Length: 171
Image: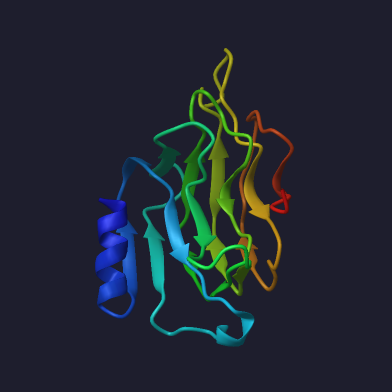
């Protein structure tokens, strides 16, 4: 459903994919990037994402070791660039029970993104037991700059290394 809504907004020349209250389990959402660098520009027809709020909208991957969102291209090995994407309204990332070695949101190639009120829960939601975790909630990879993360929340949860931090996409 998430990928279908994104595809419809893309076909319409841009728009907003809305996530209502509840737990959303889905495959990674691929944000299309442009290559080569000469094609890079802010695109007014971007697809943006609106969430129902921290704790009300919970995002979790269908499978372990999957990000929820990432930038990609059809022209490897170049690093893609995607500009001006907005995550509005706040949301909670909940890790898969088996965890993930990467970030929940991979910002490699992201420029001038705004992410409002991201929060994090390990797979046990802070209760005792062997929780699955993400290595980080937001991964800052190659060619990430000018992004703004507003009001991040992570309290009392198991997390691999950091809430937002560097990732290595060179290997």
